[in-house]
Length: 92
Image (cartoon, rainbow, N blue to C red; front, side):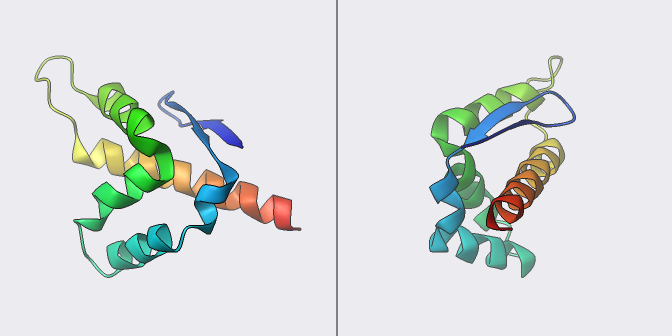
């Protein structure tokens, strides 16, 4: 289990087996190739539905009620980078 917190304070847990998911890898490759629709799948695959909802609430603007895509992407990148680093440490 990988546990962490983003720079904005979002606390998350990722099961180790999530990082060995070929469909997640496919979505990440699609994202790198500019397919913005892959973000939704990748976020849900990495965090699960409950944590995805919690992330959206974490970044929701209190005044407008909107969920900033930019803030979601930034948090997702932090979580993904942390997961990769943790996986690299475990494999060394």
